[in-house]
Image (cartoon, rainbow, N blue to C red; front, top):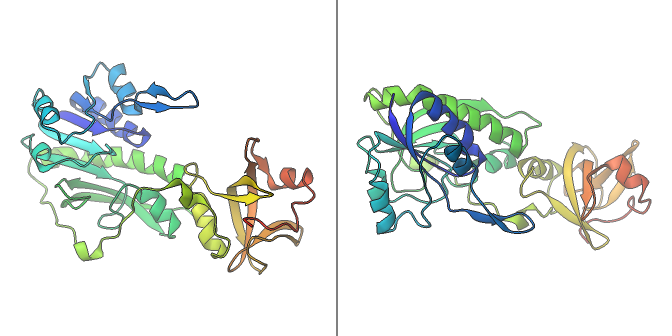
Length: 307
């Protein structure tokens, strides 16, 4: 049983911390500072902080972990290794080297593909058929450290950002628990990444969810799934924001953004093919099926979205 300090922040890290608590000794948790959230913008702890406190694990929340005072504070713990999963700050080499076995990271892609903050969104968005988990020995670069182990996960045709996130979080926890004993025993030889094969998945900006109707229907449909539930995809209709929550595709052609009826279905023209919206939400309203939405808005058909 190893002594571990865990660094993580969002929901993705929860199964990983839970697994470490079950199988090892977690002597401390490092997570992002409390942030304002919700309509009232009240200060909220991270999901990882809540879990740590529920297990009486000491929590450290540095504003910037590379500051000297933060590095000194980390020295209160003497773990075998740091385990990092979606922490949210770049760790300097001085921090990575503090434990005798260094620091390892649970990353939600098959590195070197999709280095960066949003690998789950990226894999769905470009139509990858598979992704997975990489456990790597960390260095000071952005997901550039040598690989310890990987495990592949197929991406289902109807996969959303949320469903893939949840699967990968559990897979990451399982692979980490399988990997740690061999790693700590010195039985794994880290394999350098091939930098020439690297692709990058930068932080998602909310405005990337605005639909460009001149793109192909398959591209838009993948964007909708990738951005479910956040940041969501949207267009405009009669000057209002209209979220497209779920959709499929159909063969055919129509003016990009034009809402038409074809074979008894309401579809939207794109640059190539037709988008079949199945669930919509107008700003300030509840989500509806396309049938419910159009039934109460007879002027929806033959309108043009995003204009």
